[in-house]
Length: 157
Image (cartoon, rainbow, N blue to C red; front, top):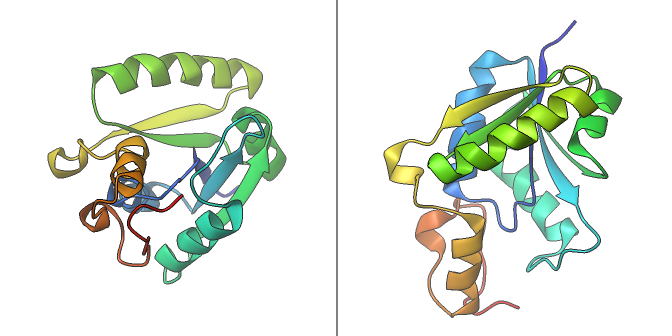
């Protein structure tokens, strides 16, 4: 049975920090599914189509990465595709406190889905999609925090 992991997120937009976590997870699994969780209640800066395209472009040369999207609970998505693992990046203690609770719930709801935490390297620990979106909205240059495949206009809305 292949070891499949899901790296879920909104990826609005994908950052260099996300890419670093996926690259570090690849040796651990047969396949890493980078999956956009779609929440109809949430307002995104970029369309689902744009975010999927960016993910496909960023991981185009990596045969062990699959790009997908899902609605509903992440644990249910994992069960649907046969993934036994979730991958999450931790930047700080606040991330750990939040992610620990979510991982325990996913273990129950997902009938044993395990979460693997990868601690961000120091040069990525300050990067979050939330901050990058604010830079973009404010007309700043978010380029240093984005993979080269992700090009956004300053002040995008």
